[in-house]
Length: 463
Image (cartoon, rainbow, N blue to C red):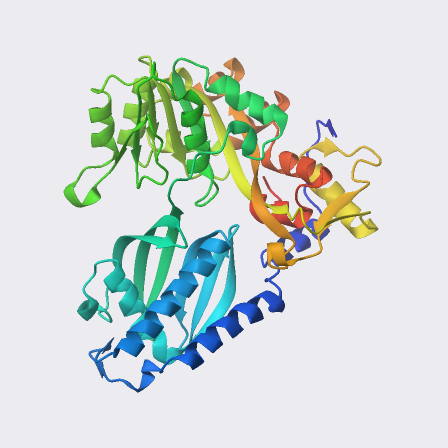
């Protein structure tokens, strides 16, 4: 693929494929049916607590058999979620039944339906596990809590969030496995060019490196990976997070406590009195935090932080919108990296195929949109997953990073100082060699790591 000067709008066929890819394929009915049968047999073996009474929307007078059933149901859900590498469990009252969905590799998948009569019992039981008062269930306000669980020897922290609905409280459980080490830079699913970029960035003695992307795009994991690569007795590394998602021995990790007014700005001021070499700020949420972090980057500290923007240079625009002076940005920011997580084609059921004319036209249209020419035969052979038990018949297992890095070069500094628009900065960056998210995605489609639909789903046709 060779860079071109012209950047043309994407064709209608690409827009159609992008919208179609917003609804990824569901797991095979074989997988869902298997779990449903396990649950149905479990319920049949034990008494149904539906016949018990309710008081104020809270189940009461549960027998030991009832408790055993609810406990077993909860353990089954947690076990299946952790076994399938789920990040979140959704328990959703639908009126006629309770829908259970797992978020696996970024996609919500319905895996179970539970009789509606068990809904209040189940959510009440989870509240008790998290240390909440079950008598407060059913009140019209959200609740948050945490608990630690051990399922078949695997430990995890669980964050519970409840939200009142007309049919009862919806509960979402975020699973954070313990004893998980950050992956190495080479294990993030980056192409060699981006592995080298990250290695060079973290070698700098000072400056700010910003990681951008939407929620659940892997920003925290990338930050932890960078910190682990720098972790040494000779460095004092301090973090300020919300919350701490992964513990790194040798790194001083702290969390904000909004309930007592301890925020990112206050925490960052305190960290600067701790003689740090490297500082990780979970998110530059406001102008005050961003300004403190940028000034710290000018005084001999290496600063890592995140912002929620669609692409790398969007972070520069966001800082300007926060009221940060352009000279402070150009003096402190070294580079901005944007990323997305795309599902990886399952290794167990991968098959290669020759793309048809429609898919080749779509690939060409996407390439044209980002201003690159596709050499004849470049997309000669692609990969897809047929679906197997290992990937729950989705064709995907695990995720890889799509990545782009915008360096704050001399030319880019000039644009920032005069507050140039995002389009002008992007043109300069691409002209200077920046590979966009979509470019990186197309390379990974060609190498068989993921599919075009998946790249369009996570990166969009306009990045």
